[in-house]
Each structure stands twice: as structure tokens, then as C-alpha cells.
Amino acid sequence: MSDRDLRLDEALRRRIWASLGESIEEYLVDVEELPVLPKLDPVKIRKELASVDMETGVGLEEALSRVTGWMRDFQLHIASPRYFGLYNPHPTTAGIVGDALAATFNAQLAAWGHSPFGVEAERFLILELGRKLGMAAGSVDGTFASGGAEANLTATLVALAEKFPGYLETGFGSSGLRPVIYVSAEAHDSMRRSGRVAGIGDAGVSHIPVDETFRMRPDALEEAIRSDRASGRMPAMVVATAGTTNSGVIDPLSGVLEIAKANDLWAHCDAAWGGAAWIVPELRQHLRGLPEYDSITIDAHKWFSVPMGAGVFLTRHVGALERTFSMTPAYMPREGTGLDVRNPFQHSIQWSRRFIGLKFLMTLLSSGWKGYESAIEHQAQMGERLADLLIESGWKLLVRSPLAVVCFTLADRPEDGSGLDEIVRRVGKSGEAWISATMLAGRIPALRACITNFRTEESDLRRLIEVLNLIRAEVTA
Ligand SMILES: *Cc1c(COP(=O)(O)O)cnc(C)c1O
Image (cartoon, rainbow, N blue to C red; front, side, top):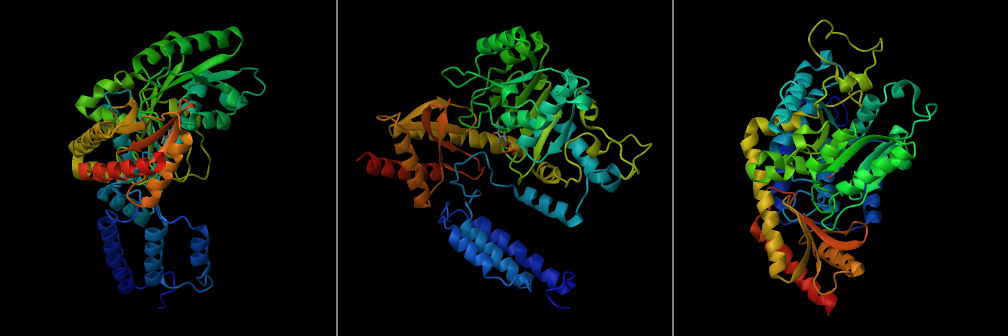
């Protein structure tokens, strides 16, 4: 059989699996020293791709070798211990294995009958995660999602459906209702987008000002709800962020929750990154109130370190997902009928869905919550250490987060945004590390470094500091 035939013979497949394993392991070793940021050369990438005769292909062995080469050369190395980036983790080995198995079985989790183990495993994980986060037994439901954006959209749709029965049939167009959801000015923009997708528009998403530590101001939230009600709008949901994308700060969870309850609003907590900190006893105090929220977004592909994409939506309102999403078309399989089971397509946005939870199950199964606890605790400690090292080196810290995120700037030129952009550019060019620049509260320029890798050690922090100090000397000379 030709090696271009889709069927491939067994001997070739066995060779491929062996060499795939080898190239994965080689990469995981080499990534410690690969330049974190590759040369940014779109022309070269396009030329490489265009060089292949796509009519015939090159055979799988050659394809594997080319693609691993291209990805080493032309990818930002998120798996590097000196990628101090945007909540994208070094993936667990168990997670990589889980994703490979999900692809191999091509598990289809739309209907229970097509993937009984997959659906039960995800149900188990949802209940287990809810239990671990301190949610009341018997009041845990949820679904896996592609990521935090889909989980936040799920929250928006469920909240609107629960607060405005009838919305699902009529939409808001004819009703004259003008619902509002409240998020902080530092919330992730996936909340604003969820307003667009849900049909309430940007106008339906109110951004509440933050205080000087970048947390949502409860007094401003109360005032916004009051004034919206007075002008005939319909407050529907309040979203607190536990670990903002910018700076890892946590909104006052208990205070926001109280206001939501007092005003009969759905309370959602976007804990995409920060929620995982709950499992570390010393960090839990920062998240007090989290389990009482009506719903929670928590990403397995962030601090639980599984490969993308794996988000989780949790809610303590069992049945709310079905009320929002359930439909019963004739063409779907019915093996589950009569059994005490659920079909994921009836309680989530996705239809055909891969076994998202498997990479999380594999990691939990192999390392347990204890494994996660020590990995997250280690990263939080590295974050504290990085903040201290920066201060020792004369950088100015802009805010302190317990969640391994550090925002800082030049001590003598704190307002110099273009200087910070230049620093980021030079750090990237050095190949030694990757950090980013951002704008806190839309007006305070900041450098941002986050410990996203459970392999990052103090020596990696010192290498970052060394590069930063060198570049600072050049830039401010
Ligand atoms: C990452 C993030 C999101 C978006 O999640 P995706 O997984 O990228 O879709 C939403 N909210 C917060 C706070 C995040 O950090």
C-alpha cells in the first residue's frame, strides 16, 4: 500500500506512533532553551507551505517531520518555562495523552448513546469540580466548553433565560425589554461579546468603574442598577471577575454577590484563571463567596494546565441548562432513552463535541488534586518571588495579585507606555523570555508577567530579571 493512501498499513502506523512520541519528547526537552519568540516572518511561513505539492502530498513520515520543524521554528513557545504570558499553560503530559486518545476514538459526545463513557466522565468531572470548589452537594450542574468565552456566553444565555422566561421563544426584539448585565471595567471582553451574541448588544453590557486596586466598586454597581431601573432598563446579571486578565485581581466577591441577591439578579463569577486557586488552602481566602455564585466560569486549559481548548461552566441551578438549550430533533440517537442519563447537546451550546474533559480526567487521574495543589501553589510562590525580585531590581509594582500575575513599570517613568512597548519588543527579540504590555483600567501602562508553567523555577525568574534590567539600561540611557 502506498504511504499516501489514507488507509496506511500497520507497520507504517507503528513507526509513526514511535516517531511521534520521540518528537514530542524531544520538543519538551528542547523547549527549555528554544528562543521563546520565533522570528516573525509571515512570508517565510507562507513560502514553506506553498512549497508542498498538495496534489500528491509528501507521505506521513515526511509530513510529521516537516510540521514538527515548522512548529519549532515558527511558533511562540507557550511550553517554555520563560513564557510569562497570557494564562496559557505548559500542558500536562497526561493532558496531551488525553487529547490524543480523544482524537483516536473520535469520541462524539453530543448524545449519551454515542459516548457513554465520555458523557459520564464529564458529568463526574463537573460534580467533582463543583464539590472541590465547595458548591453544595445536590446543587451542581454544568458543561464543558471550548473555553472561557463559551462558558461566559453560556452564563449570559442561561441568566437571560432564567430571568426572562419567554425570551428564548420571542427574543427581545418585540418585547420592548432592555436587559442589562454588569461587569467591571477590567472584565474580559468575552462578556461584552456575549452581549452581542445574545442580542442585547454592547448597550446591554454595563462596565462598572474599578477602584485604585482595579477591583469593581460595589457602590458604583449599586448606583448603576438603581439608575438603570429608574430609566426603564432591566438589570439581569452581575459578573464578578476572580483573576482579571490584565492583573489577576479579584473583585470583592462577597460584596458583589450580596448586591446581586438584594436586586434579584443572576450572579456569575468569571474565574477562568483564578478559580483553580481555590484548591490551595492558603489561596482560598481570596476567593471567599465563589461557591455561592449562581454560575462560575473556570477554564481547565488555564491554571489546570490541560491543552486547549477546555472551559467549564458550572451552575448551582440544576436544570437551568436544559431549560435554556433543550431541543429534541428526530435525527438524534436515542440509546439513552429510559436510562437516567443526559445528552450534552440538550444542555449546551455545542452540538457535535469532542471529549473535552478527557485531558482533565487524565491529569486528575494521574496526579490527583494533590498534584494540582502543589503545582498551583508553586506557581503562586514563583509569582510572589518574581514581584520581590522586580522590586529589588528597582522596578515599580503597580498591583499585587496572589494569582501569579505581576504588573510593573519603570520606577522613574511610570507613565511611559511606548517605553514599555519597546521593552516588550526587546525581551521578545532576545529569545530569553516572553512578557506582554497592557493598560490597567484603560489608562495606566503596565508590563505584565504571569507564571503559567508549573516547571518555571527561580533560575527562570532570574533570567527574566537579568534581561529586563539590561534592556532598561539601554532604553533609559
Ligand atoms: C481567558 C479568559 C477568558 C476567555 O477564555 P478563553 O478560554 O480564552 O475563551 C475569559 N475571562 C477571563 C477572566 C479570562 O482570563
